[in-house]
Length: 147
Image (cartoon, rainbow, N blue to C red):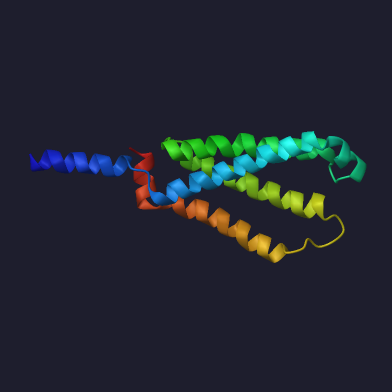
């Protein structure tokens, strides 16, 4: 009887979503929403963006938002639901979003000048990347994805 109860307790412990995974999933969900908002706003303000001569143009902004939404939303869902492929997907998406952010920031937004607050942005983006990788190697996280 005690062994059965211990086995059930172990199974329940493994199926419970660890807090760092929940936080990471919410961050990816927020990034997805940010991407969809960028897409929506680029389409809504298309004429204004063309008039202002925004680097890359409204199409670039819209496609960039769609990419963030299309990548981050499945990663958030996979993390939240504990899919076996979630850690690999989350790492890949984190790296792609990191590179995309810095491509935008350095090559599109501030052509010919240094971006304001670049040190802060670098620290925060590196922290986010490191947080993703560290959370996914925690023992509780690994157990959650191998249930």
